[in-house]
Length: 164
Image 1: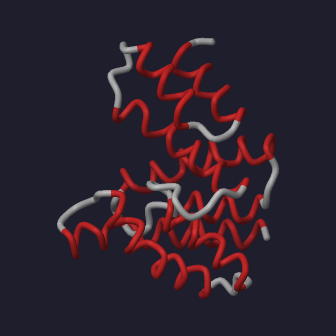
Image 2 (image 1 turned 90 degrees about the vertical axis):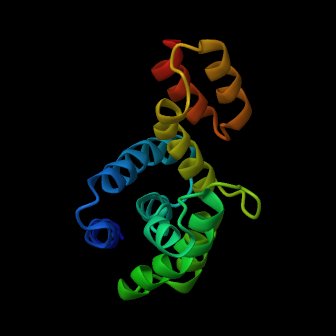
């Protein structure tokens, strides 16, 4: 499955083309998601594939809806992810699981698996510096306690953002 995950990551890079910002974001999320998965459990393959593909719908969201809003990414991402995964002969249960993660990575409404929680927390670890004033430690601490779904994700966030 490791070769499959690597091939899916390569497909994500190819899909995003010259969009280094999106590629780097996916690779950072992948980095943290792997750490969280090792500590929290779940399928390493599903976590790697979902982390690599979680924002795969962002270009279609921009094209169709003139927006990168999460709800549009959640709508547009799964069909693209399904095609990439199918091209790599991923099993149907894994395709379904990965697509559910992609379809809920902003809303967290229809899934709560160890793999989803790893990708969710990893995405927050990457997004916090982009979305919050890093000097507002009280707000960051509240956010960490409120949105993180794994103990490992919370620990990493506290180490990175609060020096705890």
